[in-house]
Amino acid sequence: MAFLYKLCILVPLVVPSIWSLDWNSDIITTQEEREKEENDALSKYFNATKRDVNHFPSWEKMKEMIGSFEDVDKTKIRNHDYTRMTSWLKETALSYPNITSLYSAGKSTEGRDLWVLIISDNPFVHEELEPEIKYVGNMHGNEVVGRETLLYLIDILCKNYGKNKWLTELVDGMRIHIMPSMNPDGYERGFDGDRQGYTGRENVHGIDLNRNFPPKYASHREKTSGLYPEVETLAVMGWLKSQPFVLSANLHGGSLVANYPFDDSESGQDGIYTMSQDDKLFVEMAYRYARGHSNMWKTGRRCGLSANGDVFVNGITNGAAWYHLAGGMQDWQYRFTNSLEITIEMGCFKFPTNAMLPKLWDEHKFGMLSFLSLGMGGVRGVVRDSNGNPIGNASIVINEGKPIYTTLSGEYWRILTPGEHTITIIGDSYESESFSVNLPLPSSMEVRNVTLSSCSSPLTKREENIEEEEERFVWQSLDILPWYQCLFLVFSLRHASLLHPLKSHLISPFSSFPIIHLPSLPQFINSIHGLSLWSHRVLHHQSSSLNEILSLLSSRRIVLILVSQRPLIAMDSATMKGKRLEWLRK
Image 1 (cartoon, rainbow, N blue to C red):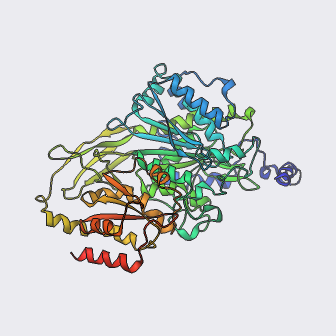
Image 2 (tube, rainbow, N blue to C red; image 1 turned 135 degrees about the horizontal axis):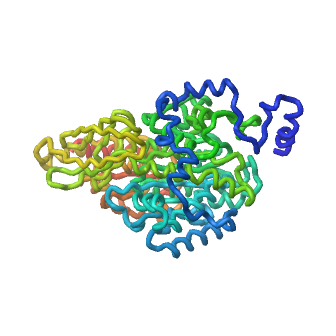
Image 3 (cartoon, rainbow, N blue to C red; image 1 turned 180 degrees about the horizontal axis):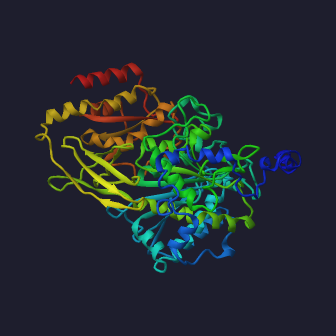
């Protein structure tokens, strides 16, 4: 790094200044890059409104909209280690007990809490149709701007509640979950003044947590991806499933850009734009944040990962179009939850000194608030049957974007781009229902409660059993597992339709990680805290027997098998597959 730093100083002496890398300069734009502004994804989708500050508020527009508010005490704008961060969060929870709730989403490898602070007018319970929004910081331990700005965001939301109208309405209208640090162990190994280094980036096992989620393409995993999900990753996967999150941003450092899915490409090569079904919406989300930042939205070269800096058009990029990344959190989240997440690179200095933080906070605060406000828009409602009972796991299908699924309470939230959208609600054994909405602005919101009519008479018990036997995805997923070293979770097949939101957590890792490392039963139970969407019980190896398991099979119950660190019940492949076939033939 010393060589590169010296090179950055020497380059202006030997090449034209436009190619020099000055970490303190404004963003540099060439004529060629300006021409690209008119042909990028933002122009493709939002050419008529991309400069409209009512659609994409600028830093100045956000400042005007929010009005005067009490900002963070400048003496508190400094780096906070784990002890100081914990004190900040606990003091905030004590000072604002009516609008905050502090909890831990799990523990790090070294036993530090993955703290989450909720800010809302009713922080302790989910209110019907109130969106759950989140920010995650410090996933890479030495990338700390997100960690610090999240603490400052907490501060202004709390102390301006009831005083500033815009900020109060934001807190009243959603439930905001803020995790300042996903990698507290890595942070403790980093050091301030680290510009582009790697000390503390990974967790204590040397695993990059943003390569550690189950990837779509297992062959694309890197050396630092690890062979199985780390403790921090498992805890966050459980957390992501425990709440009906709608919108999210993951805060990183090392460049200055808003990055959106997909991060991985089918070929595993860099520079290949790999769009999701929600590409247009993700472009809007990314530019919404970038435009609210004082500089990020500008086209051109800025300091970053390469020796000559990074070039971005309009301050946003598709992840794989920049460089491919397998096992990232935003891709996994998009594939297996309702939440829509982008990744923000918050600056080129990964671990700034205390003196640098006030300027960084000033640059980001309005982008952070603008992005949060997106969670207020779109369409939301409750899906019920003709008797008024909620319908869980109903599909919400839109003409442009991936399907999402209702909660057990029948609730749904769908963030949408401005314009007209057709939404179709589909529930098992119900007639589907469609309707249209027309949203003039990103902040526009409609509530559409839907009643679905049953499309058939109630199933007989025998018909239920036949239908249950057709839940083949469970058995198909079992086929890829080794039939030994097993821990059994037994779930009622009566509620098999509810498996969709959970199976991604329990089953999808197996396609990428043949062996899941679960050091202890209590740790595993902690990792799926909040995921149990229906009644279940765990078979402990001390009391379980082969006969008990087979009796559960014969009584029409699903057995999900999770690989453990040590043998719990020995069962060879032939025995298990034979019993499975015997059960299916009944």
